[in-house]
Structure formats: structure tokens, C-alpha cells
Amino acid sequence: MTQHVSTGPASPVRVALFPDGPDLLLLNPDISESRWRGERVRAGLRPRIVLAGLTGVVLAVLSASSTTGFAAVFALGAGTLAVGASAFAGWRNATRVLTDHRHGPGSPCRLDRVRGEFFLRSRDLAEAGTAAARTLIAGVDELHRSPARAWIDPALLREVHRVVWETFCCLDRTRPARSLADDLAADPDSEAGELAAAARQAVDVIDDSLGEVVRHVDACLVLTRAWEAKLRQRELAALTDRTLAVLPGHAQTRRVAEAAEALPRAIFAHITAARDVTGAGAFPWEQPPSSWPQGRHALLHHGGTSLRGARSDEGLS
Figure 1 (cartoon, rainbow, N blue to C red):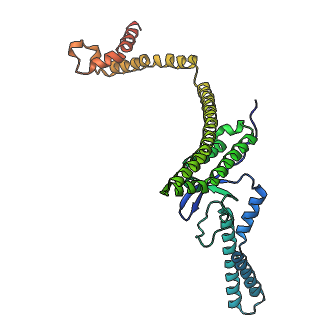
Figure 2 (cartoon, rainbow, N blue to C red):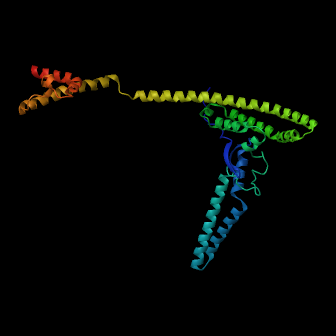
Figure 3 (cartoon, rainbow, N blue to C red):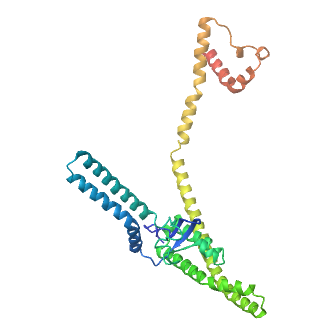
């Protein structure tokens, strides 16, 4: 098996803003990329944005044909401002068409008018009677963002997306049955209670099947996480090898240590020679240990051997 050059399809999960707060949404896998581009263009070319841009162009043309200096400057400035504002508003609407749905209940955008045409919200699915929707959406998002996706056929990721989408469509279709079961359960009539039990049993069968989808998607996540751990281990091993490769060798460090070993003897020879020339007297370590000041024993412990060796060399010389 070889690693794919492509990193796979982009995640079909988005975090979007709605009038009731932020929520996760899953995009419809049947919507092609060309159609999404068309929706972005349509959002960026809303009538009021186009009208503002045309107004700016008209003002700019009038400024070019105006004979009054102040009027020409004013018209040109207003026209430029209108064109710039409309261009910015169009760009903002186009880039946020999927993530900002705070349009108010009376003016939904094209993507919000029919539930499930372009996307499904986790909150809507949770209201259908199960808490697994957010888990599945998060699982699809993790699979599409995982470093392991470079080793997985992109068609498999698209298939996971489609299976989860079909699961949500089935779940959404149980909404009327769940509502009916709740209404029948609240009816004091015994026959209505039997109907409620039958409706609830039918819904439970569907929920069990959807629960299997959750378990299978979770198994996919377990596999990709295990491979991520392997990839991370391989990266750490490669990093360790590169780091250790630049360390100095034993011969080099031994050579440096041997060069440093001769330094105390050489310094001792110069210091004692200076003492003899100046007649400064003996050093404390040349006195009997009983006459040493407190703390000199540490000097003997750390460097006394070298100093005594240097002193012996001095005597031999």
C-alpha cells in the first residue's frame, strides 16, 4: 500500500451560526462543488448589493462628465465608496454563505428554506429523538481531518459521508412517528396506548439500526487513531535519529576532556612560579590539613588530586 498524494476531500462538516446559537451541520453529499460555487455567487450578487454597485458606477460616470470641480469630486468619492462597499458586502456574503444563517425567522436564505436540501443540523436531528447525531457529525469531521486520510482512498471518505447522511435522512423521517407515539402515549384511551407502544416499537427498531451505524463509524475512528499513533511514533523515531546524528562522537569528547585535563597542571605551574617570584608564601593547601580554613576540604576533594600532581611535577622539574 502506498500513500496517496492527495489529502482527500475537504471536511463536509461546518460550524455555523444560527438565530438560536452556533451548531454543527453536515453538508448534503449530492450537492456538487459547481452548485456550491453557484450558491456563493448568488449570495454575493444579491439585488441590493448589485444595486449599490450600479449606483456607484453611475456616480463615477457622472463625476467624469461633471463640469463643477466640487460636484465631480463628491460624485467620484461617493461612487467609489458605493462600489467598494458593495464589493466587500458581496465578498462577505459569498464566503459566509455556509457558516452564517442569522437571517431571522421571516427571511431565511435559500439554504435554510428546505431542511435537508443543502445540509442538516445536529440540533434538528437531536430534536428527532437521539443524541447520536452530534457524535456522527464529529466522527465524519475527524475522519476528514485526520492525518491518516492521506493513506485512505478518498472514495472511502466520501462513502462514510454518504452513509452518515443517509442515516440522518432516515432519522429525520422518524420525526412524525415519534411525535405520534408521544401524542398517543398521552391519550388515556387504552387502545391509544397500544397504538403508542406499536409506534414506539417501530421507531426503536430504526434507532437500533442507526445505533449500528454509530458503532461502525466509531470503529473507523479507532482504526485511524491507531494509525495516527503509528505515524506519530515514526515521526518521533525519525526526529530522534536526526537529533542523535548531530551529536559529537565519543572520540571528539574524549579528546576535549584530555585537553582539559592538562589545564589545571599548567595553571598551577604558572601560579606557583609567580608565588616564588613574588615571595607570597605557601598556599593554604600546602599547609598541614589541620591548619586549613573551613571549606578548604572541598577544594581538596574536587581538585586536590590535580594540584598535588602538579606540585609533584613542579618538584621533579
